[in-house]
Length: 377
Image (cartoon, rainbow, N blue to C red):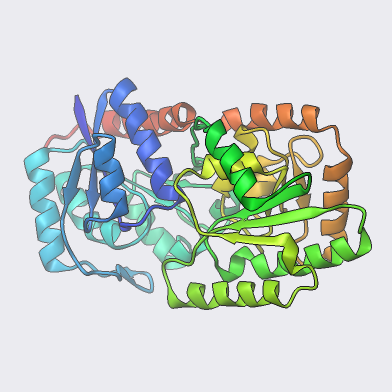
């Protein structure tokens, strides 16, 4: 078996991290590569990896900045520890799951040891363009992008789009029934938004659109469920407060339910008749694939990842998140569509994002680079 080291800058669990663990679990069972995970500290991601018996290495550091504009900013102590780990464990491949601290500190050690180095870019904020993109091209065997939308920002050569994977989870029908009773959903049309509170997620914009829709179409009775939390920054906490204030000031505030983020998100998706992704843009949108895998119609922004996932009117509906008329048209189409056919189409489309497909694409790239990189330590 050849050793493969994945590296993550994050200790919390997000879509990119859960996707990474799914790929690793597939590789443990089906690949010639033996994956391990390097983390910068213990946290929810560490606990989840250990729960699934994924080998984890921790190099503790408080580093949060890996770059100064286009120049990597390696930390001598962290980089030395990483270099020693690479020499000791003799990894064939290293894969940084973001363009951040881990990648910045792995560039030189990987080059010195002639170890194949890969990275995944999750969004334009990773700035894989301009001079930084050309710097990365010098060090990387390949850069993976989570969507063509993200890849369009890059000047990194030798890159490929590799969508994030998702495994459909088993729904707890008893839990779903209990939630329906607790939330007193009755015969209302239940629409939901799932994800962290963040300005770009545009939850407050959806509240305004739904208020207007309910005023113009009073014969529809809705329950709008938000499942989410504010993590990663104080600005997200402030934004959650703005969303709550917008709901409180709504003329239809009794129609809204705000719930904290839950681990068993599949049960909350099952509650919903429709899932809405109102973001101003999305680099990929894991919740879109999750909902589609459960046969739920999705209304999503047409900017970014959802436009690559959804075939409008066939497996979901797309709209301009800044245009009420676009939103109204998409929601009316969703309400009037043949739900059974759309549900089937959504499930079929979601099968293009299974861990086996993504892991095989990555493994083939590792194998190709590894075979070309025949010089030993």
